[in-house]
Image (cartoon, rainbow, N blue to C red; front, side, top):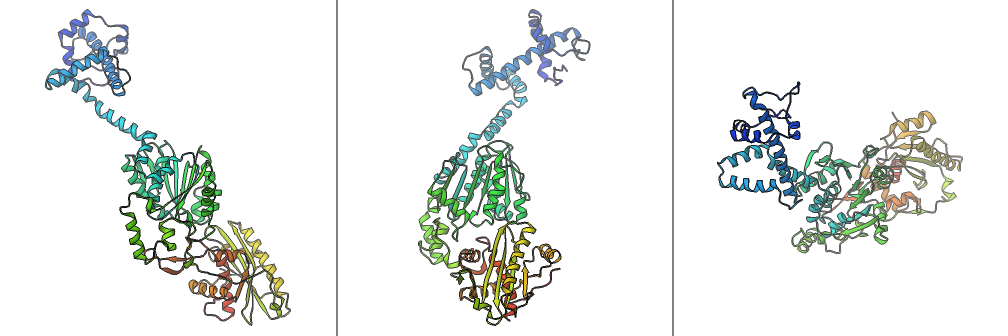
Amino acid sequence: MCVDENGKRLDQLTHQQDHDPDIRAYLDANPPTEEELALVKRGPNGKFMKGSKFPASWKKTSDIAQARKRKLKDKVYQELRDAINNDDEKETFYSEFLKKYMDAALKNTSGPEASFMAKTILSETILDDLDTNADKGARNDTDFMQFKLLKVSFDKQRDVLLDTYVRRKYIIAGRRAGKSINAARVLLYASSTPDFHAYYINLTFRNAMDQMYDEVLKVAKDCDIKIIKSSQSSGDIILENGSQIHLRGNATVAEQEKFRGFKAGLVIVDEAQSQRGLKPLIEEIIEPMLMDYEGSMLVLQGTPPRVPDTYFEKLYREYRDHPKPDAKSYNWNMLSNPFIPNVDKELDLICERKGVTRDDPIIQREYLGVVGAYDVEARMFNQVATYDGIIPESFFEQPIEVVIGVDYGFNDYNSVIGMVFRKDTGKAYVFYEDKFNKATVTEIITSVRKAVDQGKGLLMKNPKNRLDDLGIYCDTNEKSISYEMIQTYNLPAYNAWKYDKNMALSQLKVDMQKAQILVPKDGVVEDETKRILYKRDKETDAILDEIDDNVFHPDALMALLYASRQYYFVMGSDVGGEGKNVN
């Protein structure tokens, strides 16, 4: 067989042409041009290569025929491309030839014209390649991908997608308002830009996967956006255009630290009303991630907070009341969602199941997206007894004891609380409060030493007191810090008693409300008591006897709880427990 310049085998039709006397006569009458000769394969000696089954005298004309056929095929393919792209409406020799030849091929599908077309064009899978390339081009076209995402969104969702100039978006919407699917669309909308990186952060990695993994894949499938790789173990989704979507959690400091050093053009923080350490997460972790992309975007979204004074609500209110070109707040609810059939009837059924009306704070907040409809009913503390920060001198007329509680913080804040109490009456005052974010060991111990110094000053008010009537009762999740207090600073540190936590919290609540234990007015403990809520059952909304850490995690109250366990032990209460040696 003859071989072309790329070493590819030619089809059987070539052999028929090589033996065709008409072709040979034509070539004899029309000598090859220099351009055609340059296309012909030559051997190491510069001569035309000989075929094993054809006479050498024919070889030159055969190779020239192949060169002309290759040149013609290139012109034919170009005509096809031009026709598809509609680049040129002018008739050419090749377009006229194609029309006539195709007409002949279609009229006689078993004739030589049809055979030639099938072997020289269709055998090259040109139609499949054209379809594949067209599909791939459409999928990878940014505008086309964004159009398909906008097409399936309703007006409130489209506002979020189309406000591309807004770089900070704060979304508060009720349940069933379409927040999750909108987040999936925002992720894919931004990722329509090739080689883009987008992050979605929920309370935990498991929550992120449950909320967003299947949602992103479904939206991508519905909008014909091709995913080439997805992993449930890593939470990573990779699009055909090279963009990547990363699903992550924010349950611990360690999870937060994993974000450092990565770049992102978009970060969505979901359940923002319940995110612990949201302010440092944004300022210390996310903002640096967004610096590498021009026009990068941060989206915070969630339901209305159950408690006042959250950082999320502060941002939302600021840009709701004073929107800026690059920062804006959004609010809608299930009544805005056209994909819920008979939505008013559905809301009435929800109210009926819960035994409430639409005016109930639960409905207002959770379903109608009303900001400020706080969950007063689920508050752990309705009020606490406070004092102006000056303990009466009469308090020190009888022996006292000092207990200091230390909470190392689960995610963000550390806290040190000092409490002094009279052994005869059990009357107690919180005399030292400190709450600080992600401090070093040295900073934590410095705060503890300040509390110790102030506590010793109180003990010295009555000569009957002993300076060793003072103990430090620490959280047990960082025993190394407690151990350093003992070994390096000779401080009386112990592991706090942590059993029967809910029972002890209930007793502490009672004593803080009836003024058995007083806290400084407008101090950190009082501030926390305004935001601590009990959990609600997910199905019934019934209040449970357990603090909802996802709404607000108290740090100062936990430090006070650790101190109070020793206090109750000294006072002989059932909720007390003696601190243990650090080991």
